Image (cartoon, rainbow, N blue to C red; front, side, top):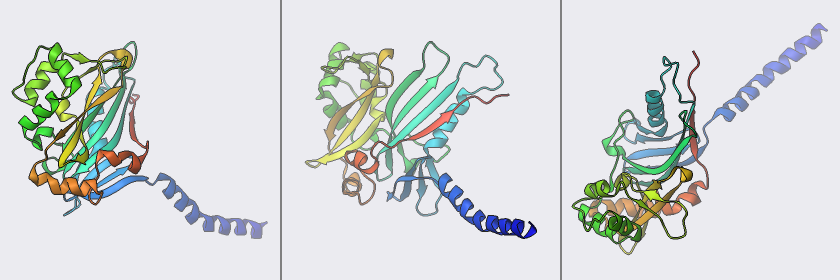
Length: 281
């Protein structure tokens, strides 16, 4: 019996490293996409979307940290009447061009109302101007002259529909356009839902290159709650500034970063989800 017990112990000791290796593999992050762009190492895994400075490895962006910070503001464990039951954030990396990263951000909140609320939008950040603690939102007008953005938007059918509804003939800037149109809903042909503009010049991704111009996609979120969580895209072509052309070319060829046109080929339907529920006292 003693001899058999000793044998079992030896077998267990031999198996321990294998079990440890299997456990470490099961908990390892699965990489969806990783690449270098604009002096930053960008990684999209099933746990986070992050960026680090290539020069020193310093973390300058984390989608999880953004979601964590938003949840921390919502959660109040000392409030017995707190109504938030669940908060969920799902993200996808849409484009990486130079230091500009764009994400699709879908948010779900069971905030104690009659039904949960949901919204989906594009968000963009400039890695060169932000930190992990304070990410810097990017606007399309940081990259393209305002007059070119306005000219392109005014030629879009849905934007014209909104401008006509708001009795707006022209806007002095994209910010002024946003202010004029944010209370106007639009309805694409054949769609039962209506959508609003929100802060749409800041909700963009870079889609493809065409005839020396770059296609920009803006997200328009749902207007009525029956369509909650849905969104549509407005796409326009604008001339890129000379300083952005090398980064766009590299992203278009997937040498450094990528454009939204290749997002599905790169990631398929994969997404990264963060879930939050109130802590129990």
